[in-house]
Image (cartoon, rainbow, N blue to C red; front, side, top):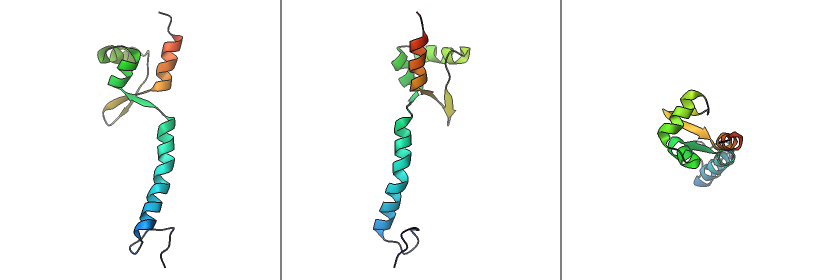
Length: 87
């Protein structure tokens, strides 16, 4: 009999599939709740050029996170930036 809690050497394909579905679901819901945009996507969202967005970042008007050498912007922070601007 196969232990369903641990997919070891003699596990069936069904147990591997069940384990994969259980591990993917929580991370998928976490990803859907947090919306991150790349530099190009954020620039398009703000209707600015990517260079203008980087200038805003370095002046401290906006924040970003760097992952594997790429900048990511939180969409809710971009909404807040638009809501608080007065131009």
